[in-house]
Image 1 (cartoon, rainbow over the protein chains, first blue to last red):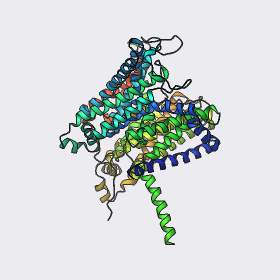
Image 2 (tube, rainbow over the protein chains, first blue to last red):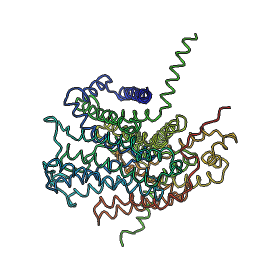
Image 3 (cartoon, rainbow over the protein chains, first blue to last red):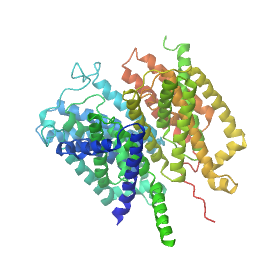
Image 4 (tube, helix red, strand yellow):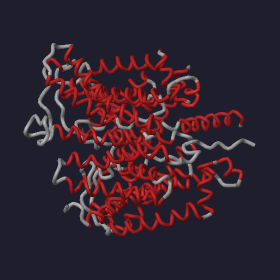
Length: 349
Length: 285
């Protein structure tokens, strides 16, 4: 029952968004049935497409967790994109610089990625807790800095320019790579790691005193302080953890999908994390479903483009609409009230 | 040094304009109690609208009006979401940013077949918009602090209950100033287009967020916010000249790093409107 209450408005919002998306599709002159057909086929049409969806869902699950951990502590981590880039670069660096046995090597790479992201979360966390600097703006600003920094590292003038024809590093060693499930598909062990981490975050948030403190700070910092919780420490911890999660996402993307760091490789996974975290209502297990939805929209979007039905970015519009409707639960409740009143009216008349 | 020429100070004024316009808009809406972080997306929508209308009608004036209209529409959307539907202000603004970016990528593909970019289109002299911006900032300083309407605006953000008792419609006031914020963001977007002559998805590039920072540094007052925006514009102009000396990636970081440093130094001291971000629920009589 509790589940239904949480999921009901989300399903309503998604339906509403798809409806408005259909109107946008029709207004811009594309065929609505064709678009939805290829969107569905591209996302779940066969095993290869399901693998594509899950490949895209992997980094999005990490960035969604990143967003929601900060959100639970009452903070906004808008800079997951930059944390993801830093994590990706340092994971790649550990991947081609160290010679380690398999299993240990990817774990070390993940740790490097998490640490790099954590540093990029710690800075705005510290600035917020100690100096009162609005983390919404600072995480965003630092995100730009991180993207430029990693771009420079692999540019012709930078120290890790690995190929003369593209701004990227050399390949990471085979020992560092995540195994893949299918031939020809990029889906890797990254998805398993992501789901495991989602479980760990759920446990941390809802089954440990630390998680209780984080959530208490998010719900009412003054009451938390009064109750003896160190608010400063928890704010810093929340953004550091958020940064680490986004950094892990970048690392997993390198170890599983690209196997080298490429300049500007992310199509906006950091932004998808905001969407994913909000759609999941900031619940770590809900984030798994939300990430699959975001991944499906991306994979489906590519399919409508490939089929020549409509531009892939139509999926980005639908994603924007989903979030817009998800964040206004009152809107869905309003519709429910209207429907209920109509039914009551029917009975009375 | 050659870098520090008069041209630099003039270029800084130009580059400060979109930041100052966003800061002005945000000053209005936050004074009324509405946080709007959707300014980035509203400016992007304004820039895209200018490009589309200027491209098809050939009239930069019409394009400017349309951009202000689209900005106002998004402002209204944010107001309905945050004021009437009581969505979290920051979340609603973030949603508008994502939606605007999605539409920008999609519509550029639909209209021109290029992802996130437009061909060049007729422009007006961007200096006209600089003048308009300075004028609006000047009269806003007087409006907010020296007129009865400005007083009403400030009361709504500081103590909505008192405003309500005095017969001021809190919700409608918040709606009006959030729409105004959106319109000013649309104007900022129109400036960005006229400054460059074409649309690219990255053309706002954080200037919306920097505008919020300028407002904070200016302590919710239009003229000091203009000075802060000028500082950001100056660094932006400076970094373009520094690209001859250091890798462009590093010079491009400067405005963002400056924003972080400035926020870390100032925010604790800003006087935030007391009812900022809180929904106002009228008591049932």
